[in-house]
Image (tube, rainbow, N blue to C red; front, side):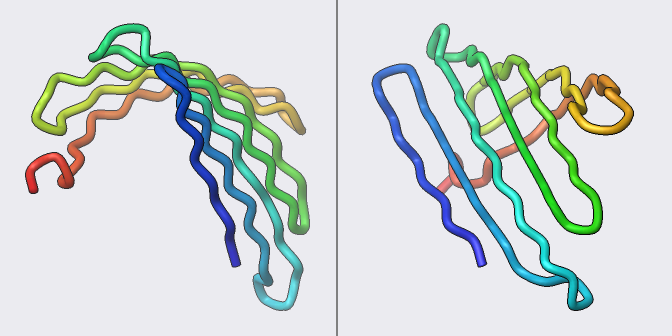
Length: 103
């Protein structure tokens, strides 16, 4: 089961989601908090915090930038940092298309 919410104030968009359930009879639960701030109409600053608990615990934070090329085409780069366990950084890059922009 999951519950999510979205709030928008001018250039700031906040999103939150909590979820829980079972996986092979083990209880699992987690959540994510997301913040996007529009620096310009085509460039956003992104922040993320996520936590997940099941047999192990994971917490990550991330910060990045998203660029909108128009027509639903986006590029996002981010640095993600694992707070629990290994304390690893992971640099990610996404190229994606949002189909809802074409409808």
